[in-house]
Length: 445
Figure 1 (cartoon, rainbow, N blue to C red):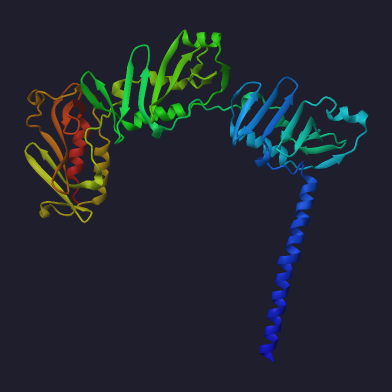
Figure 2 (tube, rainbow, N blue to C red):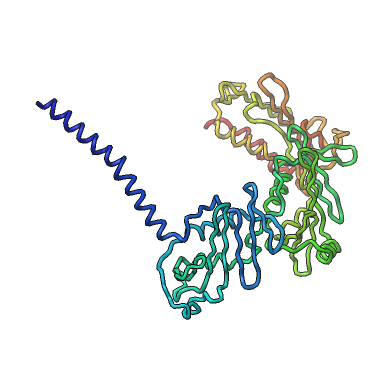
């Protein structure tokens, strides 16, 4: 009997679940959708809209979508800020009706709807919507609208009125440049006093020429400039007509040309006005005003953008480090990921100190470059340097070697060179001494 009762209870439960999922849940969903349809301004979906027109008292804005790309066709032809269009569409199409009023025709003016401040027209391939936008209510939490030719006055959230009164500039694309940093193969910066040209090889290394000498560029610095260009946003836009171009080009601050994959170019001319504003023209039909801080790129020198790191290495590839100080040599080696002294009698090594040492070494830079090529090492104490640091890989090959020569006592700068750079340069003497002390302090106490 118990077994039979259990089966009966299971069948009743299953029937109840089927009834809920097949009957009650769809009925509830239809009820919710019907109530939402009654409170929404329209059932048009944003993805279906192909045309948006906002008629104001002073200007009409027309935005048209073709192949999923929006463009402004009035009052000017321009690219569009997609986020601004989407916000406007969602504000109108998802708008909820808070209250319905049926005033007499003579009272329409009380709601600002006899001469509405804005009329919004939305069109899809199959249907359209017209919304007249009137005044705010007393608390400015809502506004009054009329839909198509219906006599009802509807009270809706105030955001609709605020967005309907936006200026055309709010819908225009504020981006000034559109290239990707990864696609850039060349960067030319031309100012009234200098021209810098940097090229990127297939391996990602940036380089430039000083006379016949090829110098390596600092990727973070060069790509930081490219990132700054991409980050520019216009706070004002003017048509690139004759007078505006003459004003821009009469006193240019400089120009930037970016070479891209596929041998295409993007060129930008920068100028400033009497009020300190910065203007950029990219060859299109508009001139953009941007933050004047971007003009700092024209003050950059070859020294600012070159790679001034003393040594170049990948920490995980190192297997041996040797430091020679006035003829005394100390070496550490790595096995199974941990570093140890070649001479076990020196004790164990603090692995965290080695990692900090390598981080510091990787960021150590020349203060200044004396010569692109070191031709006479003996004149600078670099034939038998008092300080030499050598990095080896797992096969025993030299990855890089850093040598520190004599110190200039007044400036406390030390002549130095490295295998990877080949330069004769100066480094701060104190950090070299600190590297020495840190290396000698690897031993665990």
